[in-house]
Image (cartoon, rainbow, N blue to C red; front, side, top):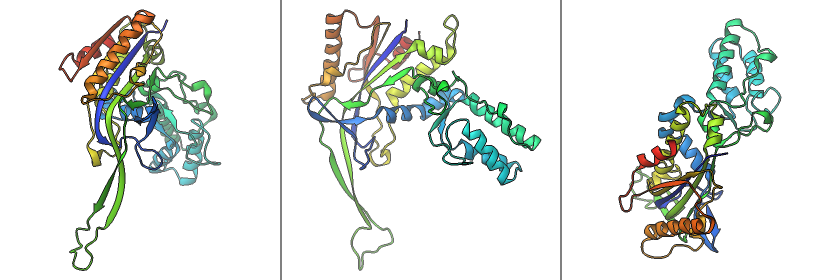
Length: 349
C-alpha cells in the first residue's frame, strides 16, 4: 500500500506578478464565484527544481530538461576536431533517441526531453568514443534511456516521452495550482523610464512608458507525495537506509517553503517564506483542504483567518470520515510555533 505525505502551505506574497498569462498579466482562477490570483503547478515545480537550494542538496542526481541535446553533442564533437558534416550527422542520430527531431538530420528535438544524469553520462561517454575512434555511432550504442533513471527531479515530477513511452516515469508528487484564499483585484502599475543622457532641454518626456499588472494575497499551496512511488522511482530498497529518498524529501519541503517563482522579482522583490505549513502522512486516501477557501477569506487579518479556516476544515473532515491521516505536524510563523526542521524530520523518518 502506498504511503502518502501531504503538505498544506499558506504563503503571503506582497504585490507581485509571479506567474504571467499570455498577455503578461498575473494568472487568475475563479473559485467560489470570485477571482483569485493563481500560480500554476508548472511554475512552482520549475522554481523548486531549478533553485540553488535544490541544486546544493541534490546536484549529483539532478536531470536536465531540454530540446537542445543534439546541439550540445555537436558542439562537443566539433570542439574535439570532428568535421562539421560528420558532427551534425552523428549528433542528430544521438538526439533522435530522445525524441522526434524537428526535421531530417536536425539537431533539435520537437519535445522537451527530461534527461537523467546517468543518461547524459552515457551520451558523453559515446561522444568520447566517437572522437577517439573517428567514426559514427552504431545502432546498439544508441540505447541511452533508462526505465527508472536515478534522477530526483524525474522521480518527483515524472517524465513523458511521446516517442518512447516505455521510458515514461509516473510522477511521485502531485502539485496543485496555488490560489489566493482571498478575492483579488488585479491592479496596473503605469511606469516610465527616463533617458539618462537626455538633458530635457528640448524633450522633457520619458523615453519609455508601460503598464504592468500585479496583485497580492495569501496563497494556499497543496502537495501530495506518494512516498512509496518515490522510493520505487529512485530504485531504493525499503529494507535499507533510504538516503536519497529522504534527501529528496528534505530538499522538496525546504524549497516549497522558501523558494518563490522568479516572475518579475526584480520589479517587485516578492520573495516570501511560508507562514504556515501543515504536514500529514499515512496510507489513507489523500484530500486537499481547498474547500476551506471556497468562501473567500474576508477581514483585517487574512493570514490568521486562513489558518483558522484550514485547521477547521481538517478537523471537520476527520469528524465525518474518521482520521484522514495517521499523524500530522505543523509550524506557524505568525505565532512562532513549530520549526521547519521538525517538519523535515517528520516526512523523512
